[in-house]
Amino acid sequence: MSDHGTNSKSGAANAQEFYTRWARLYDALATYGPGVATLRERTAAALDPRPGDTVVEMGCGTGANFAFLRERVGSSGTVVGVDFSPGMLAVARDRVAREGWENVHVVRADAATPPIRDSDAIVASFVSGMLADPAAVVNEWSELVGPGGRLALLDLARSTRPACRPLNALFHGLVFAGMPSKRPADLSAATDVLDRRVVAAQRALRERCADASYSTHALGFARLGAGTVD
Ligand SMILES: C[S@@+](CC[C@H](N)C(=O)[O-])C[C@H]1O[C@@H](n2cnc3c(N)ncnc32)[C@H](O)[C@@H]1O
Image: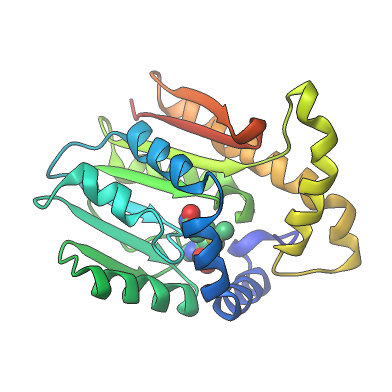
């Protein structure tokens, strides 16, 4: 999470290099990390696409959400994963081939300006914090799915639950460790920037979806918003 996010040239290059280098380790954590599968299941349930729908996952990484999304849209639906890091996409492609999923596709592109014309639902997990202007991107995604389309965002940010606040220092360290660019100036700002972007993304979703739902999980560190675009 650099100051400019992945919308800037250098931010994007850093992120792609970082995620490509760590793709296999990331995949193990993203797939088998404690409680992560439950969060993914909840996110797919909150997105609530119909059988037969086309769901686009922005910043799909190694495809750890694909099974949960595929289960929702069924064999007549389609899942498209969009990501710009070649290493993450390679792991996602391996996953799709290994599972023999013919209705799951991955595309290398910028999630902020995706080359997608038609989609019933868009989901993004652990991505808002990497975008320099998450509200603009969420608005773009709202336009893409159009009225009646579904959106869901899952993100990590500092916990606001009083009993869990002491854990925010540990969370801060983990966020810094996971940042593509580790300049000293980023150290103190790491979680401030993350929190601000996550709040902006969730607010944009609420502004576009009158029926928006919002819940926190994992001791308040995970924030899940979803709704239908007006
Ligand atoms: C923390 S990982 C999350 C991966 C996946 N969504 C998950 O839940 O495990 C963030 C992913 O977003 C991708 N990403 C970040 N900004 C992006 C952008 N502007 N366009 C495409 N992919 C982006 C990165 O390449 C990385 O794979």
